[in-house]
Image (cartoon, rainbow, N blue to C red):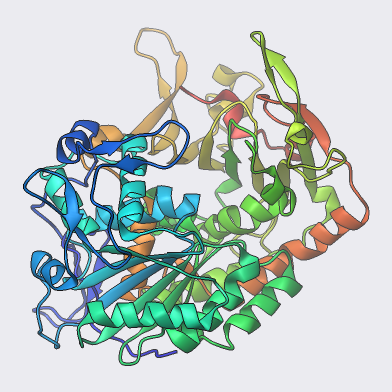
Length: 596
């Protein structure tokens, strides 16, 4: 595939800073992009209803519309009667500002697997949000590609239904109806098989018509099961790659099931792609609070000196969901919570948290430091892991199902829906500090957070005020990734009054109260990075290999020995064994007494 670079998309409102190579004094300066644009688009129900009154929602089936039936290559426009009607490709070019200036490159974004839930609920809404904020290039085209038979009009109608259902994902913005119509004129659909070079060649011909002879940059998002990754990449590479610009492919997890399958997948991908064309996406790296980790640490003098074994007693990475597999147990049962959450999301956060100061903010410098952390980690042992599986539970007259009650899950399944682990980094900075991970489904709350518990104050003069429970006097830094993003530091404080009564208080940065701007969805940030060629938040192949090397021996031992998971009630705090695991390292899970 072609790997030529081109000018990146310019996004005036993109939040994070990039380094500029020039300044008035010859030194590097941070350059922040600002924007006078309105806030991110939130498709309000009223806006959509007013703008598209002819969309009719059906209760059990496709969405019907009174629009004139459209051909598969025909954009729509609003006719005099207010209905959606066909328009030619040339008229569409005029409507959305196409011109014949071949000096300006085009970007074609093809979502492979466009009829799936991920595409409908995450990828297409993220692309619209980027368009609303003028973060996409001037000349762009979006194509949905899937096996389902669908016309352009049906794809657009599908998008409307998702927007109507997912209103809370967006903020109300100005001119949302106008922006929506403009965006949908750039959206098209092509039906084809994932292993058909002929179908991808047909897609290539359609893309070339929209590109109009300009330099063509192409981004393929593989929103498909991993067993058909290679077929799709092969066909896209041979039949639909760019001839004069760059071609990039975003690959969704899971990246294999273990070291061997991951290495085989990487090797197969590299038969058709160079490493710098492969963007392995872990959407947790696009979360605002995860992105803020390096800023918090490296730009605040008070934190960096404390970021070591000398002051930190333990680090906890907690992920919990308050729902079960909800009908997707067939997929989940093949992977389990360790592969689904721990080996990627939580381990990536751990690497970012624990890495040494990189030489620069360049993607390779940051990823080099993350790899060093992963390679320094002690191999996981079975005794350092607790696995669990949720069972049926009745609460308040409501009976919640067990994992094996899911019809897509085998009745004798031993797949863990919960796991807790103690990990150690054997280097000078973190030697002896336990990094405790916990991830589970059907727990008492939904949260993702990083908790940093500092050491006790030596010879604390106020120990008697806290009694024998020294943990009450421990300072703790909490980074709440979701929901309700926040960073807060627990400190000890005197309660006003004549006596000497101490209280544990929070210095709290609550994002919703501090910042009026809506936090971008992780997929928006990562899609924009892929378009711009920014690889900092994507996973490199050696990073992936190091992550799998850490977990594969343990996963094989769990499966070969058929370790029976500890059962815990649906909606509980998880298996009791997780608390014993933490207690072994004199740690108490920080989410047991969470402040509301």
